Every structure is written in structure tokens, then in C-alpha cells.
Amino acid sequence: MLTLDRKDNTHPIADAQLAAGGGRIVELTGDTDWRQAKAAIAGAVRVDIRFPKFNDGRGFTLATQLRQRVGYTGKLRAVGDLIPDQAQHLIRVGFDDVEPDRKGFDADWARARTRFAHAYQPGQGNVTPLFRHRHKRPEDDLAALNARYRDLSPQDILRDAIENEWIGKIAIMSSFGAEAAVGLHMISQIDPATPVIFLDTGRLFAQTEQYQRQLTDQFGLSNIRLLKPDAEAVAEEDSDERLWRRDPDACCSLRKVRPLDAIIGDYDALITGRKRFHGGGRMSLPVVERINGRIRINPLANWDAAAIEDYFRRFDLPRHPLTDMGYASIGCWTCTAPVQAEGDIRSGRWLGQTKTECGIHTPAQVAAE
Image 1 (cartoon, helix red, strand yellow):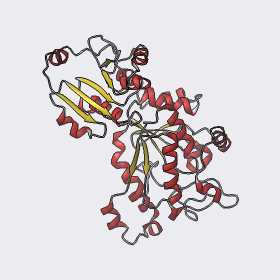
Image 2 (tube, rainbow, N blue to C red):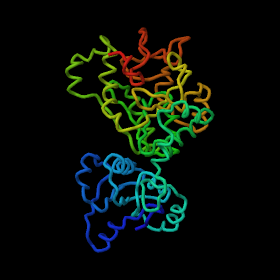
Image 3 (cartoon, rainbow, N blue to C red):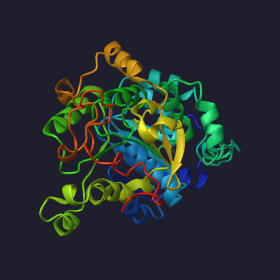
């Protein structure tokens, strides 16, 4: 067992019980729901979270939930297929020690452990815990956040958001559309275990589903969270499968807004791929905003079409198959068309209608119902 170099990693009572061969130890898999885990770990002196693969990020999320939501203060150990490069993130989400399956990395683990001074939770060392550092900068101070990110590159914005500001409580939303590869590639270079929320409306192009699989595999994205509309609600509200034509706002609500609302409480911040050059209401898009009380980060807000194209070429990113057919903004097949001559990038969405947004980025008080 390799103990992580945290100033607060001493649990004297638990250590004494374990040394004497007593105390209850609970092992959880990374996909365990934290609500179920709460009862399972009651009274445990140590909780082990098993990582089946080093690029499976669910264990990091569970550790954060046990510390922040359940309030677990005992020993927390990561076990399984882990590599020394993950030591920093293990500490940040609350692990005390690690038992890696991979052998021969002791020297690398020793070097990794010496790099970190922050602690996650209060302990005998009286080190200020990391969550206190976060709360010294209130999330709702949007002016301060935007000022901090004003001159940063999208990559630096994402790194700060993922590794410092909203550790373990942040996800990226992706449609796996025409420009999605840019933001997803950046995420993969920072932390490929970052949750990726993908709304499967049941009306996606087959090419989009193919592209989602391609990018996931190529970028090593290990935490795709697939959301689908409630089957009973679809059967009741769209029995003839023509709701998109009768009431497109209601269709978007059924297939996108409500599925997202059901899980949005799992995160303090969501990353989007929106940009100002898309036009319409996005022309004044800030880098950081709040929608319905929750933070949205738009790291690519300042980028124009040329910057997006340059990134695609520089990293030789794969293109969405429909872009060669004139599709510039890609949603459901029922409501997406190729861009017409002189049209802007989103002119193929809800063609011939005044509708310009699906509603997932619209404040509830003004969202169409």
C-alpha cells in the first residue's frame, strides 16, 4: 500500500483498529450510486474504491460524492488499475492512499507524492483543505471569474475549471456535432475522465451516433453519460412521433431539456461549446454565466470560425461526416438542414421558424414551454 503525501492523512482511531485486525472495510465499484453507498459505508473505518481501468473516471466522481455529499471522513483508498500520473487527482478528490495493481512504479509513485501540499479535508496538520480554497472565491462572483478568464486560452480556462475551480463537480455537454471535436480534444488532453453529457434524443442522425463512437475511442474519453428521454413520457406526449412538427419547443423540452434537468444537480458547473460567432443571442455570450442558478463555462466563446478550423487542422481532428454535405450545425434529423447560400452557421436549425435554441441553454423563466 502506498500512502499519499497528504498533510491530513492520519486517522489514528481507524489506523489502530486496522492494525489490530478490526474495523469494517467496505469496497465499492466506481459505478456505485452515492445514495446506496451512504448506507453501505456507515461505520466503516476504510472504504476502498476499485478502478477496473486507469481511464475509468467514475471512481474519482464517487470519491468526491462520498466526501462532499455523504460527509465520509474515514480512510479512503483507491485500488485497481492506477498509474502515478493520477496521484494529483486522487488527492484532490479525497483519497488517502492507493493500492495499484500495476507493479514496478514505486519510484514514480514516490516522486508523484512529493508534489502536493493541499489537503482535501481538515486534519491534525491544520492545513487549509482544498474545498476551503475554492470557496474563498464564490462561484457566484461571475465578474471575478470572467475577469480571471478574460485573457486565458480555452485550454487554460478548461484546465483551471477542471483541476482547480470545480474539481469532481464539472462535466462537458456535447452534441458531437460539427465543431464538437475541438472542445472534446482539449478535454482529453486535460482529463479524459471528465464526464461528457450526450443527449440522445432518439432523433439523431446515424452519422452523429457514428461520430460519437469515433471521437470517444480516438480521444480516450472514458466517462460518457448518455441521456435519453423518458420512454413513458415519449409514448404519452409524442405517440404519433410528430411533436417536432406540431410544437418544436415541446419536443425539445421532452427530449433534451427535461433529461438534462434530471441530472444537472450532479454538477456545479457545465462546459459548453457555444461561441459568439454563431450569432443570434450568442453574440454577447460571456465565458462564464449562470443559468437557472448553475454555472456554465463557454471556453470557446471568443473563438471565430478561423480559429476552429485552425485547431482542426493543427491536430488533424476527424470531421463530422455531414459537414461535407453542407451541415454546419447539427441537431436532430427532423429539425436540421444544410446551410443555405448566405446563411449563418446555425441557419439550418429549425429552418423557416423563429426558433433558434433548443432550451438547454435558456433560463427557465423565459424558456418556451
